[in-house]
Length: 304
Image (tube, rainbow, N blue to C red; front, side):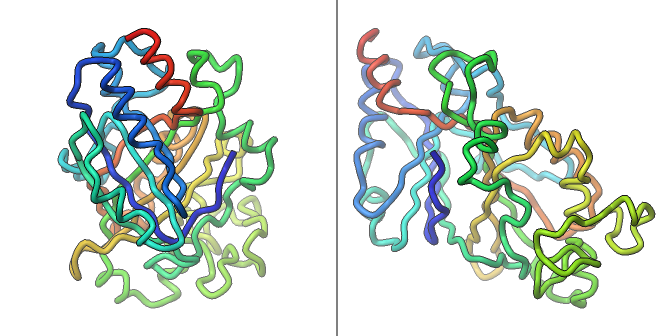
């Protein structure tokens, strides 16, 4: 099931320091201990399946590659495990952040908050599939029987996290009409340029030369509204981070049944988009969200 995006979020990536299945089970058990007032999502990275624990790897889980415009810092990338904590009030997760789960070492950690509008001034999540529509979620997000995946993966999903520094001084210096052409939306309504409502069809067929919505606009590159792109949708949301006055940005997160058909295909379409000059992706990774961590824990203990 999907849960609402909460205002305060913490992302913590860990590396596992133990070589035994029993100790890995203990580490996972510590991570899933209920936190009052918070939701916890546990995902695993490709490096967990390096043979240490004799685990069957999700078929499409790989180490996140470098894309155009990326300047990846390995201190801020990848990890055996990823914990995403969401809450209404940050105080709810402070005890977890102060704890030391056994057999784990922190690889990277970042604090985010989710608001209706991002730092660029545009609304988050426009064009997302409806997370309350089970048919759409099963089609685009949740791994299904018959997906050529290990049986334990059914009901899970592939997660992408991208840490992106934003060039705010450059962006803020742009006139609003330039910003709107970069995104392809009107800033105060989020409607596609030339349309009156946020969810209106951009109608690219009547604008083949990009007179209204430029050909390199973000929404046009991300989803050109072809039959192929409509069948390769992702569920995405973003969080704002503020590491210092000069280093602010976005934690982009998305979920899909297939990394290649979802995020990777979209990311390649975005190469050369107008938005690219304002973005510096420096970290994150590919992960697989466990459908039920308790099942994996039980399996690790049974065969340890």
